[in-house]
Length: 320
Image (cartoon, rainbow, N blue to C red; front, side):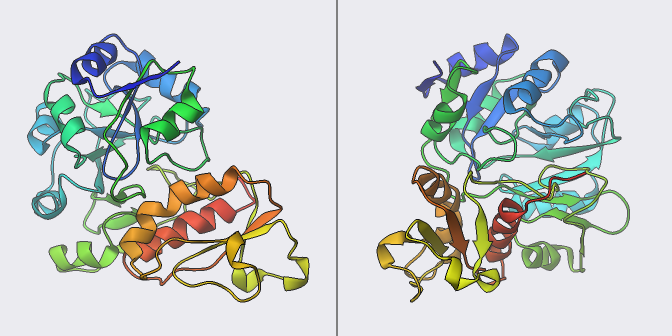
């Protein structure tokens, strides 16, 4: 059984031995391994049943540490890091020789991030290696935002979960590709496209779905519940049953009883909605139902990330 606790020393010793540990971040809980230990990293893929073509993010506590490991940090990245790191922004850069190919799925790039969580930053400062850490859940399922979510899904598969409380942001980090002259947005997340563009003083391109998966979160189907999700505008209301539920932003729909509706923010706060999204989806998954009706959220700032997660969760087609 996976033990839940807050002992950094215990987590450190396990990671040094090549074991996996659940770790908190401000976005979602991660499934961490020594990024310099290919055997430990392979355990991540095995435990998550994650496709090996889907690369991982590596985490440390400063840009200087990444530079020590041979990663070249572009000037644009440093400007963004001054504003957003530690925080929910991941940077894809050129991979150095110190990074095992299993991290990058054999590509010449690597995704790096400095998470904004006191407990995990303390852990990272005491390690001689970065941590590879995708979300701590089976591949394609809803990401965990508490230690107990991790325990419920990976209980017999990992020895320890570092408990840092509920995640404050609740959706994964935004990912941008910093290689080349043009910055590209690869995943919507905790930092909006507009915020990135404001710091850079330039527009960035969208590359949110691609046959060339160079970062996590680019697969068409992801973050899925076991119940089908149908968007409100695609709904044939004659198909609504007594076992149909709704996932909504701030107000109740008039075509389904209130007791079968879950609101993410009664005050209409997108940040609150994002923080509650995955935990609410998990709660709904414990209810016997036919399907979930979802509405699209305001498509601004973190609302775009919420819509992205719901659209991928609703997708019926696995990435080729």
